[in-house]
Structure formats: structure tokens, C-alpha cells
Image (tube, rainbow, N blue to C red):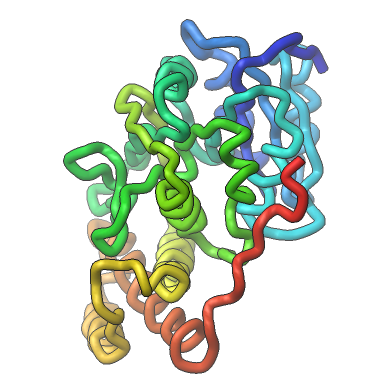
Length: 303
């Protein structure tokens, strides 16, 4: 594969079995306009499909494209951490294999990283579904997202950070298996005194799940991990306990809407709502009632 002599930015793409979409994302990166010198590190988290072959086939077309093996431990946080370990540039930006960056994405994040320690960009739903929503990934008035009314955060699918800062913080917490690891990271970053900025022109077209089963599972994972996030940071959050009673009631209300799953117009939205409420209840049972949030699992060696 062709190399970039002195990259200013390393693009890290965590991926597991991404052959259906990875090529499109890599070609979108290759088509960046006015971008600083960059390399691409695909962090392969145990793929068993044609992900590696896609990278090999594009290696001669895209300078600085290489693959690192992060398959020793499953999870997007671990894949990102291993990608940063392998990065050669002082700035690191993350995008996902199943999304698509817009032409000025890298330039915008690079400009913002000269002013802030970490930055987030705009995430736009890229699916023909009237019920699709970004939930807590939707930007607030200041641009960045918010969970539980606490500190802002940048979506992991559109996040940039100084590599030395990322390593100083121990990277992303690998004990988060299903989401919200970037929220935890952003909160730890700001609590440590680093700055988090907003790059509105750095836009990523975000793919929602397009099947009811996929939408349910994705939302369930996010719902469960939201409770893990709450238990990890409950002492500093400006809200009271997340109510188990209300979570049970919400799930019962969503179950009454099960007939809407069959609707072409509202089926995906119903699946997401049901998945979220089921996940929140599962999070209560896993992290609050019969167990506790697992201890942080950060990068063992930041060098």
C-alpha cells in the first residue's frame, strides 16, 4: 500500500464485517477536498467477511491506507484504541465503516483541531425513513449532543482529538460494549480540563438500521448502555436516579403499540422505541439492581 510521508491527521475506522459499506466510505475519504495530508487506519475488529480484501484492493488507489488487527477483543472502543496506537499523525479523527463522510469533512475537523483538544461534527441521518431520528446524537443549540443534561459530547462516528490527549486519558473505556463510550470519553476529557469544540461543516451521513430487527437491536443496545453511563457518572450528573418504575411503565406502553410494527410507515420507529425501552430496563437489571457498572477498562499502555 502507498504511504503518506508525514500525515497531519490519521483517520481511524473501526470495523467488523463491513464489506457491504466500507468501500463507499473509503472512496468518500479519497475524494476529500482541500484536506491536509492524512492516512487511513482501518482497525479490523475480527472481520470474517471480505473487509480485508476491500482494503487490499484499494491500497494502491488511496495513499496511506493500512489495516491493523484489533480482533483480540470485541468492541468498537477497543478497535478505536488500537487504531490510535497505530496512528502516525498528531491528530486523530474517527468515522464508521457504515457511514459516509462529505467532501469537506476532513478539512473542517482539521481546522477545528488547531483550536480545540477535541472536536465533533454534524451527523445527518442518511436513510429514506420518515421516522428516523438521531435521539441524543442530535446536536443541541451549541452544536454538540447531550445526555442526561450533562456535559456536551461528540458522536464517535464524527469525532476528532489530539492523539496525545487521547492517550493521556487512556483512550475510550472498553467496558462499554454497546454504545455511549464516546459520551464517557467526552465527559472525562472535559473533567480533565481539555476543550471540546464544534465543527458544523464536518458532516457525516449516518446510516440507521433499515430493518425492524436491526433497529430494535441497535436501540436496545443504546438503551442499556445509557444506564451503564448513568451508573458510572451518577455522582456528578445533575439529575436524580433513573427510575426503574418508570422504565417498566414505558416498556408496557410500548408493548401496547406492537401492532404498529407491521406498518410500513411507522414500523421502524416502533421497533426503535420498543428497543430503547427494553434496553433501559435491561440496563437497570444489569447495572443497578443485580449488579454494578463494570470498572473502567482503559488502554493499558498509552505509549
